[in-house]
Amino acid sequence: ITFLFYGGIRIRFRNEVLLQNSGGNKRYFCLSMQCRSFHQNSIKLKSIPMPIYYNDEYQVDLPSRYSRFPMGKYRYVRRRLQKLILPKYASFHRSPLATFEELQLAHDPDYIHRYFNGQFTPLEIQQSGFPWSLQQVNRARSSVGGSLAAVRSVLTQNARVAVHVAGGTHHAMYDSPSGFCIFNDLAVCAAFAAKKSMKVLIVDCDVHPGDGTSHIIRQSRDFWGIKSVFNNVYTFSIHCEDNVFGISPVSDLDIALKADTRDEEYLSELSTALYRIWNEYRPNLVLFQAGVDISESDRLGKLSITKEGLTKRNQLVLDYFLALRSESDSKRNEGPQTPIQLVVVMGGGYPKDITESSVEYQNMVNLHVDVYLQAAERHALAISRFGPAPALS
Image (cartoon, rainbow, N blue to C red):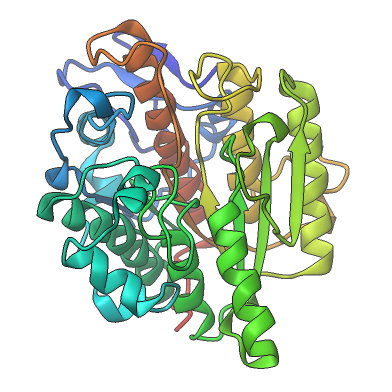
């Protein structure tokens, strides 16, 4: 169950209402089954909102031949979040545009220049999945800029989680686009944070592999050796082996699952991987690519993860790194004992019916919304349990 709905009943989260519906008619939501026990605690939440960045003002009206990409989902997700989450618990910010210098942290300067100036070749336009336009340039820049802003928020403010209602553009290579990705926000953010001496972990849970991210980082290590900024970055991708197209990923840890993998196996593999990574590498910043295209209802994904499985995946990652694991977890003492700063980005989600008013489209939107609602809940709980996050840089 992603969240519980109680019509006409006021549900409180540690003596504070976290969510409301848009009508303001005293209907409230509880995000997870665990909330029930939280209500019994009388500690009052400190009001530290989770920063939410969004870039849907740069939405591009695509020609019909590009309609398979659900451009409208960003707007729907942002609006739904603004209606559901009380302002006390989330602050909404427009995503800034990434600068040329910021993009250079992970991309070839000539590549950036050619894209900015409309000099992509026909092949590059085809690889990108989008027609070129100035509005599309701004959209690509904001996809990185919002993720960078989220990273800055957890490094310099007191939030333990910050999110971007966009991003997760993990297919973009150092000097070429791929799969609806022009610039790689995960690689740029990782480089930015690593230059500030952070130990960064990328947890990529999209159904497609983080091929661009892993190759950008691997190429930098191979070229620069011990001088590579990416030596302070660990890449992890869990994906479907049948969703690997073209170049294979070269992450520090790749888990390629069989088609039609179901909830139990997926969650077991993910949980085992998180403990393994923690034992090998102790990050102090996690970038979570929370693609929902692992859903059994996704048009492009080939896994069979239910809505309940997606909810458990989100909670598994959030609770693991925010040190909110259940006391009944036999490995509870083997993971982080205090919260690790977390940034959540959107990733993929592709409805079978691309019509925005369709049930399939809106269900896909709701899967994305659930990710951010869970992040808001777990952020509030982490603040309540551990207090405000320290500024890390």
